[in-house]
Image (tube, rainbow, N blue to C red):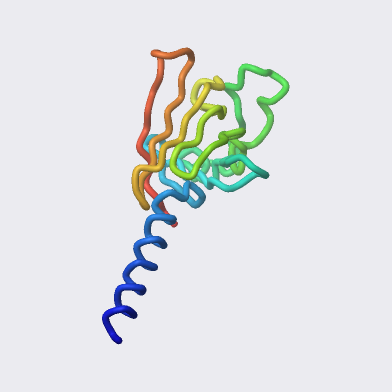
Length: 139
């Protein structure tokens, strides 16, 4: 009697771990500038906002000064949406856009969940001119 219950419990925990491993939502640490990005669902897509960075820690009112659109240069970096329109899932999200405040550019993007605690964000001007970063889950 214990063996079937144990087998069922192990199967359930494997499914839960697998589902979590493919979940891109959460708070992620970027590779550069101490960035922390919160990824969440926005309807049927994924989006992400910059919640913290070295620049924001130094000055919480820091603005998006390098934006190529001059009308957006006055917006604060804190809580600024930088990922949007990613569709697909559960472990690979494509067709999205990545805004990079460091150069004010917006790039085509792909998010791939590697494990429960790691994802890869790829941004491209035009393939093969791409950059990939590994992000680590904070929570």
